[in-house]
Length: 230
Figure 1 (cartoon, rainbow, N blue to C red):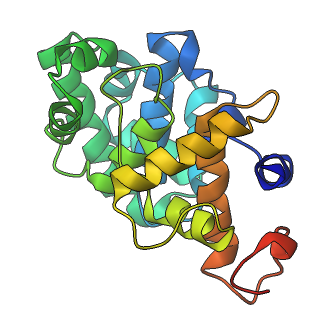
Figure 2 (figure 1 turned 180 degrees about the vertical axis):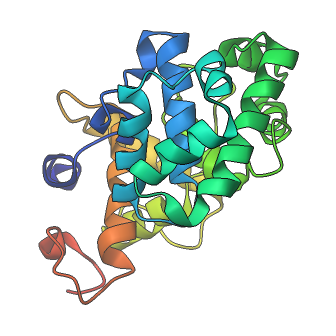
């Protein structure tokens, strides 16, 4: 379907790729993406979350040992440098709790956590159990870019992605999450875009839903394809 290539060309693919993270290349990269997903999970702008991740990555603070070595005050400094000031204290505490639990229960290895999980539900429960602040939004952000990497990574299609897909006429708005994902996967198999993966399509739909579909006053680069405005 031509609209898929147009969407990806205009809005780009995975958020992890945008940050220079290659989630398919190994556990260290997936650990970086987990840190970024925690930052993206707060109700702040994506640009601030991205900037804060880059500040932490530039300082080498992306793995459990490095996070714990910084301590609470050191993390607050980094979060403030990235502009994460509204949630700096809370997020510093959350990061220390998460990384401590990850080391104590899974040797600091997210891939071990995933391998231990029996099924997709168990995987999400294990991630949530790392800290009280790890909620559905953070888990969805993290796992949707790990489809086809971790077999248990099968999160529901996010509301923003569904909103974007509905506006483009890819998925009816009244389907269950499982049905919606099957239809999106079928569209992708019928017309994959060169140089991208289905996870890129999902991320592009999130951007479309977040930045345009729920903000109708903002000019949409996919307006000519939108079934709601035509």
